[in-house]
Image (cartoon, rainbow, N blue to C red; front, side):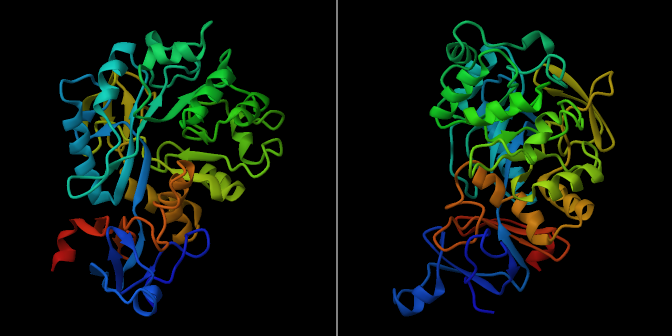
Length: 399
């Protein structure tokens, strides 16, 4: 097979069984130009051993893991983010959005300045910006978010947002409920600041959701979870997947937690078949990821893990997942019966498109960042690369 001849994942499959890959300066090279036009050699040649090569996974909703809670205002938040960034390399994640659940303003003011955007490397996956999930959400559909800290948009609308969060320099995504008064002003202001607005934890009907998209919202937070259930006369936010009232050319993206607990396989299949190009796999992982049974934290709440499920302690309310991204990819593939290419796009290309990074991330196109993952035929991670550099390798792959 001729190497490196696959373009953007939207034009051809984002993976192939490859023998090697050419890289220079952390970018993927076009071998035809390399040998016939540029007359130069690559900095690196990576042997993929005929395995599956795919773009690095991107997790746009992860609350923590391995005992680290991003919503805790510790003295060294950066050290916790760095630990998670290292540990998720083994799951094929090359970049992510640390996520904060509903918290009091003093937590945001202390934590957000300590999570700057950061390139990935041997130290860990890259930080693309923070995802703020709440506190501007529905009380009825708050899920695991503490009611005492929920907020609405008051007279000053966007100024209320700034007063709650503080500076938005490190923020990439904000999840809010579009039925809140003056939400459209806030959506427009956040979008003008280059921040992705996601709809979630909401009782909005379809009309309110469509108005929010027309105002600039582009994402849905964990579809089906923490929103009104689908109804044939008013499908609510779920109806955005097939709405004909969205701006021309606008693709609505939606997150799905494919951990086998949050969403029935039939619901995964319905969503994927209705709107496959918008599906974004997210882990929604909580600090208990990688720790096993017991009591842990999630922001201001105590979490109890029992087997494969995390609940608010003392209840049966789900509060995030303990499944890493590679597990979600494999479960999604099995549950939907989609192609391997589609499963991998949902964890790479689609989140990159959501964040406007598709020219650099989520693709094996020439000139893209050489962030990629090597997988066996069962989609278990064998090696993870960032900027063409090996940053993690499975023990069996070292043999």
